Length: 131
Image (cartoon, rainbow, N blue to C red; front, side, top):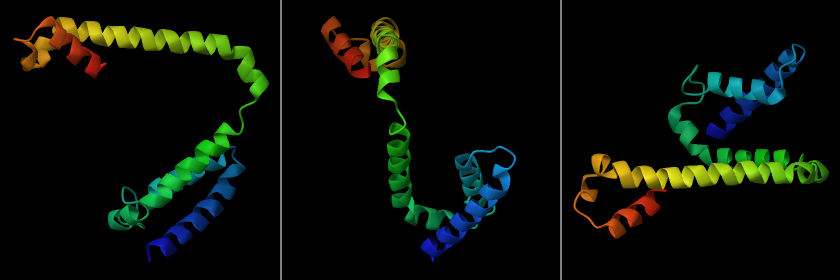
């Protein structure tokens, strides 16, 4: 019954999406909106128990969405902006990593009581694990 309900909701979402595409809404937005409305948080067409039985389908769909989104990357455009993207990525990782380590070393004993009576090496080990 869960798969049959899913097919019914999917066909309804497709029809609903076709109607709203004239207003400029992207299809994926209308599909997601209809899924929320039909799900356990909305009209409860699919109950939470039926939703749990269909979790495998969610994983497959996310993989497909990621694959199709990744297929739209144009290699030439990526190469043009690669150095800027790597600079931003490197900066974010560096600031986050060292900021997390520094914060844990300086203020970790306030939030993690076991860091009060340990050596600096143990504090550094904990900071590296947290980072």
